[in-house]
Amino acid sequence: QISTVSYSINGQRSTANEFLLDGAPNSAPAQNQPVVNANPDMVQEFKVETNNFSAEYGRAAGGVFNVVTRSGTNELHGSAYEFLRNDKLNANDFFANRSGTARAPFRFNQFGGTLGGPVVIPKLYNGKNRTFFFANLELVRFIQGITFTSVLPDPVHLTGDFSNARLADGRAVTIYDPATTRQNPSGAGFVRSPFPGNMIPSNRIDPVAQKVMRLFPAPTVGGAALGQINYTRTDGNKVDKDTYSIRMDHNLTERNRIFVRYSYDDTPLARAPAYGQEFRNIAPTAGPQVFTRWNSVVEDTHIFSPTLLDQETGQREPLR
Image 1 (cartoon, rainbow, N blue to C red):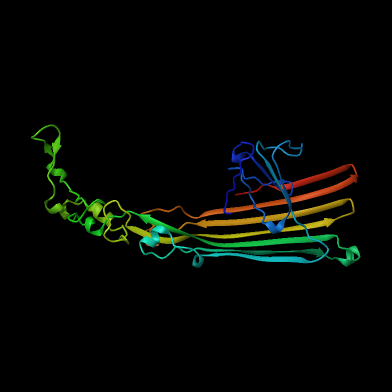
Image 2: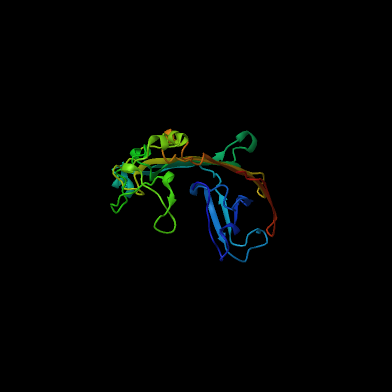
């Protein structure tokens, strides 16, 4: 729904497919995924060809996905829909539940509608409907809940006090003084003496490290052993997706028809920082991703005879 779709056909890679929308290329150059994902309510028909392509298709070693959009009719028709998901209906995440953290926020609202019908111009066409429109709009407001877990230094340990430092099996951790490194008098190698009381004197902690230590958030789980998860936080990635498409059809004569369509899709993704906005600098999170895509088509179809048809399609290259 956000950016990529992958299908593997006939054993080919998922990037070996071709996507067409109203006969115009709809494949992004990066990974050959569709540029504009047509909403179901705007689709008149679709076809997936996996082999024995006709001469009009190419650029595909896998399959060809051909989607044709709907046009307006002589009667005014419309539709509206809403799809809802909410964290109130979900169970809590295992790690969040274990640490007593509230479940992550989750909101998914997918809503939109369509409207299609005739454009009546009696003065030019004597009341006959020869021009039609079809418009589609879909909005998505999505907060994707995520639970962050991490192993952070105990605030007491950051002061150099490791008197209570223990491993998960209960064994105490001994902190040795590197300044006492000496030749092993009893054999090969080197030995060092532990810090008295398992505490590092404050004057032995590097001044730069002392400033860096202030940037660490405090653990949310107390009493955790060294190496065990002691930080849990819930947040949500945010997606505000706006898509719309409009199509105009005009019958010049019984044998000649033209149509133009413009489709737009804007899907920005804002990722939540692992430790919240206050500590964003110590754990850089990928910045906002913006997926802005569009696809437009102009097509002129002329029937010369029951056995001869000319169809010319022009398009503007899709951008990302």
